[in-house]
Image (cartoon, rainbow, N blue to C red):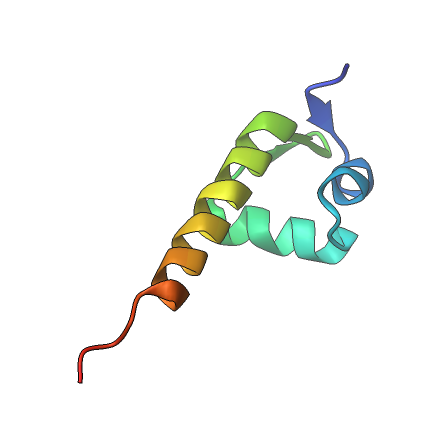
Length: 63
């Protein structure tokens, strides 16, 4: 099992488009070294960001 994947391979694994993978890496400061991305770092960042977004949307707004 490879840990460092190309943006295309990572897009397949994460269910995103290739371009979105690259954009998120730039936004989140995930390095792309020799055309490869650390799968573990990317997926954990994706879960963390998605989780915090979901929590923010679920919290009721004060009236």
